[in-house]
Image 1 (cartoon, one colour):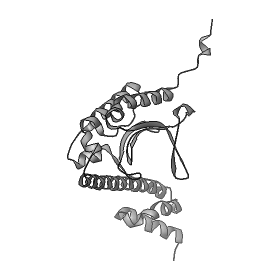
Image 2: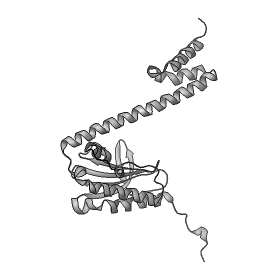
Image 3: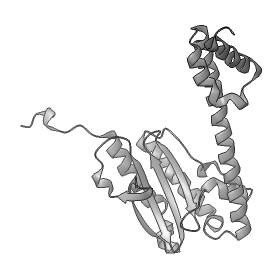
Length: 226
């Protein structure tokens, strides 16, 4: 009789990967059956700036980046699942380089369907399967927009994407500036003026009045009396 400890423990990440690939195959099967796309997928790594896709069976643990990709000519549909925040995304390519999110196309067409959007913290198989199923159903519902958009729609979608990325960069910089202000205030309170200067100088052009005065005072303290 085998002891229970002889049975290897289940790997939750391996289970999520299996669920991801099976759910994509099911939810987006219409791309192969009705539209002539070829499907492949695996784990993504980057080597010398190139995206390399390896078989998922080679997963050895840790953070994963999984991809199911459908291709036809220069057009591609990607469903991407990243294990750092368990985020699911849908991407479109109309050439071999530039990508759009599913939501970019829908917004350009003035459509609203939350099922197309990115979702994070999908750490349960049922939630992951349901989200992929909803994404696939959304894609099939709007397949003409996704698979055969006119040039004007694609151009609007790229403008929307550029604006979204710019807003994200601005929001991240604002968070970084707020964090720098807090860290500089603590350093100033500790009379660590070198650290104040090191923290605030990279943001000098965008500092508010209080932070700018703090930086000027820290520099004067470092220089000492005239």
